[in-house]
Amino acid sequence: MKKCTKCGEEKELSADNFTIRKDRPCGYSSSCKACQRGHRKSRAAENREYAAKYYAKNKSEMLAYNKRYRQTEAERLAHRKRERVYARTHAKEHRARSAVSNALVSGRINRGGCEYPDGKCSGRIEAHHSNYSKPLDVIWFCKKHHVLADKIYKLTQAIWV
Image 1 (tube, rainbow, N blue to C red):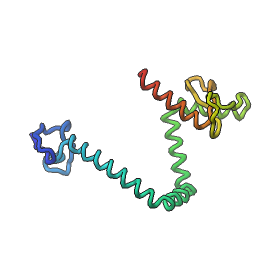
Image 2 (cartoon, rainbow, N blue to C red):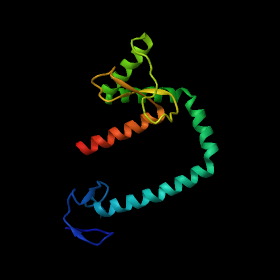
Image 3 (cartoon, helix red, strand yellow):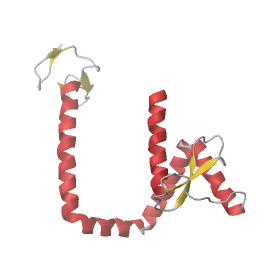
Image 4 (cartoon, rainbow, N blue to C red):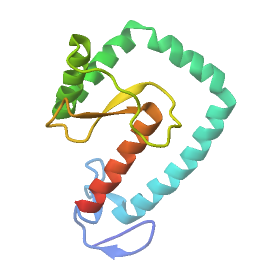
């Protein structure tokens, strides 16, 4: 049994209740996992507030720094690496997007207009896949309505799973 230094509760000394810390004499942290979780959540909220204030105060400098970084060779390499990782982890989606891109270039399909019924379109016309196993079966949406269609799709998937 071990007593948590934060809440004072006596709990069984195990990896279920305490984080393993090899630098500690007993091999576990002094506070229980529940207390650590609460501490992390409160620190995350404080950090969000601080980050928002910092960004508001230093927005122009941060944007300029990011712009300079995006133009460096290090960012180009990092961006390529992120793209490769994404292509590997989302192979089906990546293949479907590539198939549409190649079909557009070769002229097998043509980019249509936004198929959303409200007519208040904005942004570039994009292909929306309802089913990635049918890569050329797409619905054309403007950027605004594509984002909306993706949100609706994700919500319906969450409901039916």
